[in-house]
Length: 108
Image (cartoon, rainbow, N blue to C red; front, side, top):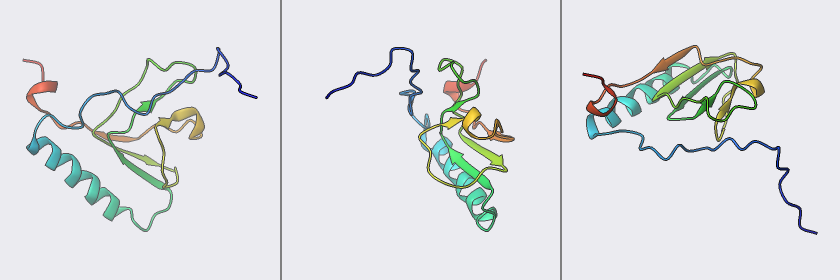
């Protein structure tokens, strides 16, 4: 039997369709910061570090979202996630976020 999705079920996409970086310098900074934070917290199982991961802070609202270049959530276990859905993370938001400036995300 084939079942159709519940029409009231909200989908939280894993991608916003935007590139991770606008240029090689920005990409290098994003990956350097993420790799160093992974190294810094390698022995702490309760520090989650992610790069370019969609963060949904409000359950039931898939339009309110951000994709920080790098984010750190203390008190959350390491592991794979398609997105960071805050209500599934004991309502703990990322406490540290990094946004690397580039011509594409800087107002003049």
